[in-house]
Amino acid sequence: MNAAIVGIGQTEFSKDSGRSELQLAAEAASAAIDDAGLTPADIDGMVTFTLDTNDELALMRALGVPEVRWMSRTPHGGALASATVQHAAAAVASGAADAVLVYRAFNERSGRRFGQPDAARRGPAWNWYLPYGLDTPAKIYALWFQRYMHTYGVTNEDLGRYVVLARKHAATNPNAWFYGRPITLEEHQRSRWIVEPIIRKLDCCQESDGGVAFVVTTRERARDLKQPPVGVVAASQSHLWGGDVMFNYYHPEVADFPEATALATQLWRTSGLTPGDVQVAMLYENFTPVVFQQLEAFGFCGRGEAKAFIAEGNIEVGGTIPVNTHGGLLGEGYIHGVNNVLEGVRQLRGTAANQVPDVDHVLVAAGRSAAILGRV
Image (cartoon, rainbow, N blue to C red):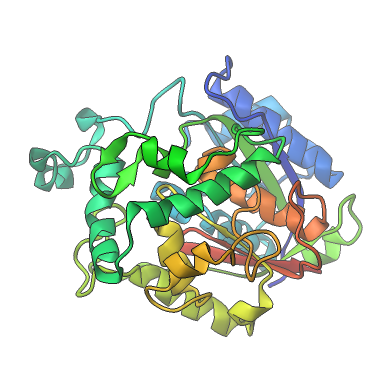
């Protein structure tokens, strides 16, 4: 694919930013443009989420971008986090834009909190679920996770081993909210239940204030810019009949993540790579079990084997496939998963806080969307 990430930027990740979401977006975007060695006048494409409150025209004015030829938005929140890479890459590879700015910014903790009940904002389909108390993401996803955990004998203590590792990585990452604050498995097990016996508080992603951004252009142009380019090797999405981004209860077998399995098949086929060719994986984790499901779906271990795979140390730095070396959405911050893209870029540049040696390819996956990034 003729596309490369050439600049990354972010704000601090906090619980009370003290400024508007537009200012957060502008700060992150300005940092990404500067990191690339470009100016706002070079940007002619923009990509964000349908959920983002920051209007493209307002951000253009804030940054000083004179004209944009390409705008697109990805739906469904974090599940399409990696689709932002796909949208931007498609634009530059097709010639629809020369340099695309991808951004995501919000005050998710100090402003509107996604994890709280909010029936007034729901569409009509929620009438099937709200009467039964399914009014928060934790409750909704827990029903799906419960089948996976029952089928493969996964306990909440098994989940805790991943959380301990995520916090270990966050503890040595200065960008992370939980920098310097690792936890033990005992501390995880003492955190309060959110949905018993599935997920505890420490199994849930953070609610964060902050912004992240990155810039995508063609590989030819990337070679002349400030930073070592990070190529987009492959990027895709998977949406299956009967699926639902939150209420994923309607597949014949709900113990697994069929969208992630189909997505993995696409990526390995189109890239010509295998799981063994990837040195680091950034796996979206709004809740801990999603990491287990994606490890299995992408072929890093077999069905039902993720709990042992994690317990054996395979996803630590120095393991078979280090996962979420920045601390992930549980440890670093929750900017709808786009901060995972930034960590993938840092690993390939060799500038990550928890750097893995000799990285040639990074998988950045969000269940229904994923990208493989690589050296150019």
